[in-house]
Figure 1 (cartoon, helix red, strand yellow):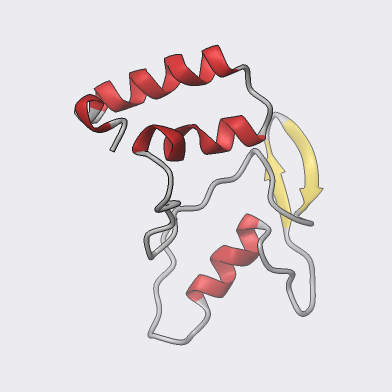
Figure 2 (tube, rainbow, N blue to C red):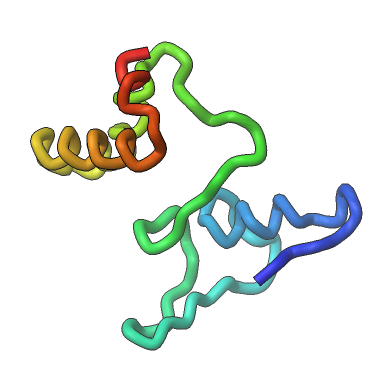
Length: 100
């Protein structure tokens, strides 16, 4: 799916509503999925993600800490987080920069 339009037409607002960061001023957003019942978007959810237009890193954290932030907030076991962060850093070729 693509969302196209001129500057100021509401593309970012739509994406923020879909991600659950903003509430629509009218109507409802319903997610429909083959494997789950239809659900109304009432806030952020684990089944959706968002990539921000501007950098959204925590500048005071290392690369490793930024990557592990989401799973840590969800209460994932630290050993699992460390393993996954190592794997992701290796995949993108940034393993040497984890502590930067």
